Every structure is written in C-alpha cells, then in structure tokens.
Image (cartoon, rainbow, N blue to C red):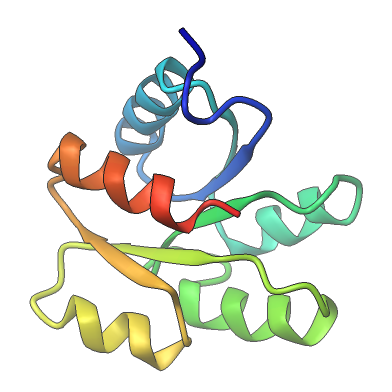
Length: 124
C-alpha cells in the first residue's frame, strides 16, 4: 500500500522537542520526510540549503525567531508559496493563522486524525 505522503517533505518549526519528535514519528509513519527546526531562524538557515518543503507546520511562540517573524521573512525570501499550517494551543488559533495568511491551523494538543487530514489537504 502506498503511503499518503510519499515523496513529500514537511518542515516542522517547533521549539518543544517532545511535540516535534511525536509529530516526526507520526508523519514519517504516514510516508512523509520530516525536517525539524527549533525556531524560525534555524528553519530559514535549513531552507537556504534545501529544496522547499511541501508543507510547513509552524509554531507561533518560539525563542530566537517566532512564527510571525518567520512567516514574514519566508515570504520576503521565497516567491514560491509553501502551504503553512499554524500549530497553537491559543484559543484564537484561527486569528493567528489569518495574521500570517496561513492555509489553516491545528490545535494543541493534536487530534491525529484531524492533523493527518489537514496535512494531506495542505501538502502540495
């Protein structure tokens, strides 16, 4: 059986190591290649030497460079628009996603079925 994410890379930008590890394990089981960055600056540095991912899962509150700063800098540097899903525990998650023109959002804690559906819909 072919896995849904075969050939697609997802960039996770998340400072919580437990969350990023759990997401990596789950998404790899779905067939995706996964890259983890601990903050927006680390993600931008990885992108300088890599092909653009199919999807970015972006935490908003991180040290060094937060999600808002990352989204602004990413848009300024890259013409190709990569879908972004905001990951947040905030009650105003939809608003936070709209602030950076993200394709959607997923709430923390994650419902894996919901996460999988949103990733499949968003990953180009």
